[in-house]
Image (cartoon, rainbow, N blue to C red):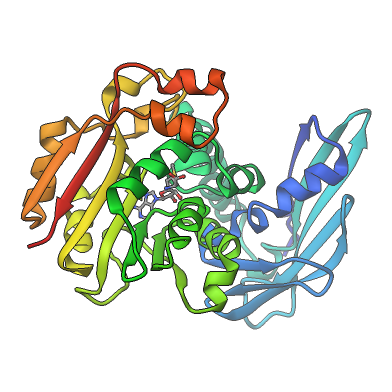
Length: 359
Ligand SMILES: C[S@@+](CC[C@H](N)C(=O)[O-])C[C@H]1O[C@@H](n2cnc3c(N)ncnc32)[C@H](O)[C@@H]1O
């Protein structure tokens, strides 16, 4: 049989030096493998695992230059190894990143039409799908706000400036004491929790971004160590906590990203103790085009009318619900924003504060 070449290579140039390109690739996290159920433990002794089982390993790891991953071929009886090489070549102020996969098809003895079919499906179709304007805007929305990931998002959510006034507003609405057990839904990097935990309350948090959950734990390390705080990766519509235990729930800048709003509010209602309160901060359509609701996020965010927000809370089982349009300017001053920054919070409020209570 004629031996077929089944090498695959892709190259792209970035205006980054090789060290920065290397970090960007490896930080995503670990080349986005996590999104496909795989994990790469980086480093010279790194491993690739899928559902806990090792499927491959790192055989070369030279930061800023070269990484080679290796795993067994698709034919379980053959000894062939598949090699994936990532190279970082400097080019006067830029870096050419090359990705080459070798040996993946050899063991299967695929005939040319099968090879071409695989190539069309796995690579040919993936590239146009990934590069449509909709896919790219969706990816940017996820990375920055809907499911934040990557170094820039972690830096931004560690200590965000512009949400500070609405965190203050939520704290004023909650009036936390040591007796409270607070749940935050969509906690991002845990900055609001850091403020909330100063009241002496206990707290828990959920977020569907694993990177945000890790950041929230890291930012509230002392409270994690003393057992006063835990953060868990979960969907708002499937909160992994027992019912009737939280005295209050807070959520900020999340609700418009939740696809199933009644299910999420019903879950929040379930985990609240009788008499428990919910404070939910979100943006109305009036904020579209302002720095608080920029594109491409704004087109992927659900804006509810005030009446609709209230109706959703009542449908989820809350006994009382009301929606206000809070004035954030005093809170913006209180958190020490500069006069230029305070300008963003002046005038008619396009923000909504839903306050609801369980019977
Ligand atoms: C714009 S960020 C806001 C983070 C934080 N609350 C703040 O105000 O800074 C939205 C957060 O909600 C999380 N999120 C969005 N949809 C979610 C869902 N359906 N379930 C759980 N978390 C969600 C995202 O991962 C992200 O961390």
